[in-house]
Image 1 (cartoon, rainbow over the protein chains, first blue to last red):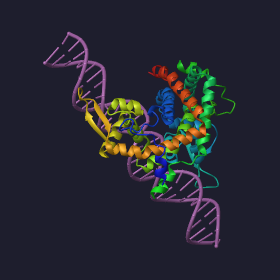
Image 2 (cartoon, rainbow over the protein chains, first blue to last red; image 1 turned 180 degrees about the vertical axis):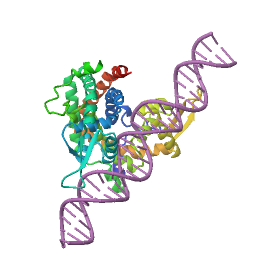
Image 3 (tube, rainbow over the protein chains, first blue to last red; image 1 turned 45 degrees about the horizontal axis):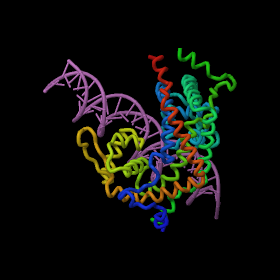
Length: 175
Length: 175
DNA sequence: GGGAGATGATTAACATGTTAAGTGAATTCC
DNA sequence: GGAATTCACTTAACATGTTAATCATCTCCC
């Protein structure tokens, strides 16, 4: 049922004998976002690497500097990491003594994490370089344009937040 | 030396006793791009999953429908995958008989890949759903706004392409 | 034409993304 | 007040991202 309906929107597919046209692949939104993000991260990664940090580890440490303590779940939300990834990284960062962890007061399930003095020192060593890079990007792209881009990205995120994934109907049809 | 110069741009850091302020973390460009892309992919992933494909496998198959044959290096560029990732995925896709691979005519180093009939069939089963999702996103976000966003993303990419990563200076300083 | 270097692809090793399952602790609800 | 459920976090398993190393070919140049 869902199949039939979906098939209706498929463009004629005999034009090129064995191709499903679709949008030209490299211009799809996911690819545009992926390439843009990679172009940005390519600027930051070398500096992080010089300090022995991955992008995700940096995100976590950066998020921890925003408050004294934070629960793991909240940290996952802020650093935009899935639970399993966060678990592994926290284990490693704790082993490197860059963070500290303790149980929450009223709930033994929850863990509370904070950055250590050593972690702060590392952050302070990396942050200046990151700021320089960020400033260079802002200057070359244009501060106003950058702000506009970020607003459009936020709007996209907000737009999609209210969209249940359309692929779900298909699952039901196949059950 | 690099340290001293970089330190100059660090804002006063005694305001909060133990924080390096920087830009509010969640509003950084990399995070904005990451969240936006994730919001988009969240729409597509369930459908791909229902067909036994990951996002990257889909990218490869999609890229292969654009031409009869393509060299592995060119495929990596188009699908925006690093060589090692592509190597692994091609091995799996070949094992599943979704693609075919042969050596190039004049250069035994190069491999040439093409999509199989089975792969094409799979693409044709997935594409309609993807189109529906893409159309829904376009409609809700606005076609004009979406085009503008993609143009700005492309411009960002182009801007950064000409930027050697700033972290490199730091390496030299530490050698 | 043969050896040094360049090139295309793969493999290795480690870190993360992603989904599912597991574990222990709190909540609910009867 | 205890069984069932929910919740926070972790583990497990597999796929990919990332960098370095390897391997086979190819090119160039003497």
